[in-house]
Length: 271
Image (cartoon, rainbow, N blue to C red; front, side, top):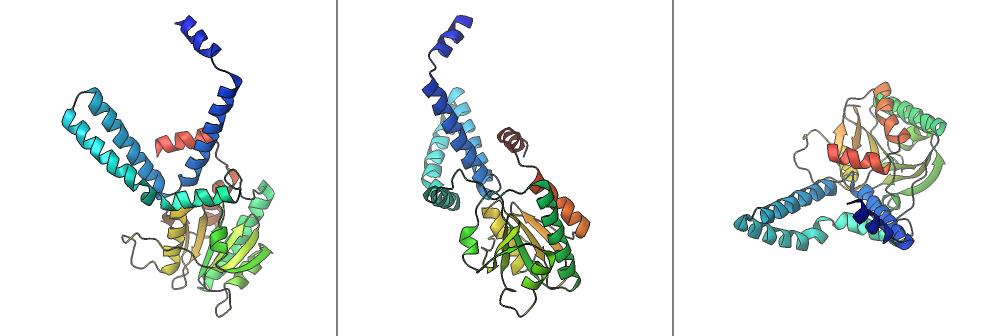
């Protein structure tokens, strides 16, 4: 056994190791692009179908194996449609040379300042029942959405954010998109979610926040214009009724703990 292992190791060259490393990095990047989207759940479903197919073949369950073969054929044909947003985003990043790039990362002090400014602005907007939609970019670039608004490129401060959402101003309608510690653009249009099971009291802002986080890994803070309730959207899910302290506690780990490839793998296994 030991001799066989040594024989296999002796056949591995430096080019083989480089080849494996490149494939591993590409697969990790592709996974990271879909890990906070509905596509990840679909990918898990495909893996389950594949396991059932292999098990049915191994156990000679011919009818089940035949059905699974036909199902997998249909699924493979439908994949380009199902994963259209992720494929489009990957091709765009590849064309821009950003497939392996990252968004602007902040140090701990800058991150804390950013979160405090956002929380203070949100508290003031909530108190006065001024609607707001604040988007924070993470790994997935949001240039497509920022291009739909008015370019700002201003340093984030609570006063600046409050001023952006003052009613009857040009930037009030739409979302403000933050990259790093700067407001990239305001008055931006976001995609609405197709989830019809949401509470009917959730308005367009909440549906836009959920819609964007279904397609990207962005974090969106929403202030309701009708009730002043503060919510956070992430991964297509909404957490509501947050006060200033709870908002900071919710956001802090999302921007201070950058996941490694290993932790991402185990988080995926446990989800």
